[in-house]
Length: 494
Image (cartoon, rainbow, N blue to C red; front, side):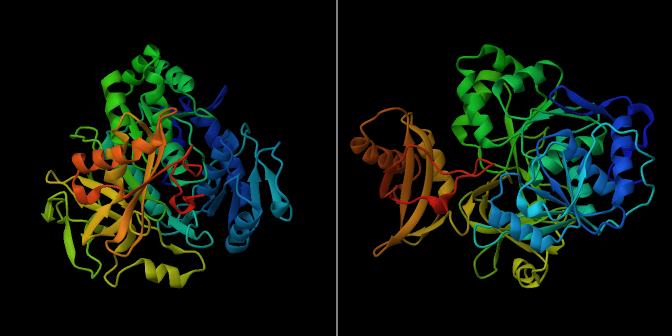
């Protein structure tokens, strides 16, 4: 029996709902049978690809692979031909698991196909205990600087992250989680599916996110909601005209946002309408979860809390000098001034093992003393909370001798009533080194000629003069990926 899912042994939760997708569901006893039977067919498979649609079949496939001790490679069904071909060539799975009705692209036609039956009598779950260091999942990164890299996530990383979150969020088997996230990445799959199963709780997947679906499930006993900022923004927009949605969100024990920063004005609108705060956590594919606001702790919009149990975290200068961090007891040390910007580096049992077939990239990702370089820039506020200001590659702007994080300028812009969406980048400037550039989606049909200078002055008053945008571009929409993250490399003047 795999230690990742003690609840699948049976006992008191055997008849409890484990998974529900729409009107289809599996109890723990049914999941143990279906996944156990499939696991028996996967022994010696090497690696298995999973066509990761938001369905029961995907969840059963991943659980079965983990029970069998076989690494699973979740595939994004929206991947283009080139990206999918690269992932398959790199990971070399021997079989693809999918739903009986799935129409697979040509790139997968050469693999043995197993049509997964969500409802199957199956056989006993394999009792073998896998090595905690053994690969559990190979999750491919977004590939913004080249072809996607396969982050090899060991079993210990999944267990340690989920157990740390359980402690921070007071997450138990009595919780019922609702979400509508894709199942080919860390947030939707590991936190959203494997998290409830490790606790012996329940998960209800919406299939497709909607405010109506969220309200329905929270009114029907769900206690937790996981989402990304785009989802919470849509909820915040709907709250003004939907009193029932506000009541439903107010019933939730925990509202969690992740994968990108949730704008401050959405935090405030949701709290004002529901009386509930949205808490944020910080993680990435290679590290799973690093920090979180605690369920019983103070929360301020724009912060991602403190390191999770077992996670070491520090901020460093470009030359490797430590600016601030936490000691072995989790107490803050160094510059907790909310202004000193440094790169986040972490270490702990939550980290990935390697980039598959990329020893060069793996070595470059770590410091000589074993810390993982996240590439994310942050400050630590006086209360010890981590506040991320952006990515080192795209969000750290060096202007006039200052190091400026794009995130705080974006939040300031979003506080202006004329701004619907905002992104901030830097571009070369002969005088300043880099100048701050704002990309804004306005609210409605406005006079943008006058609005640009007004927004620059607004930022200067809200933050400081050296943080004002020198250029403001207006767009109809911002380019985003499947997780709602803004694709800043796609922002151009055209």
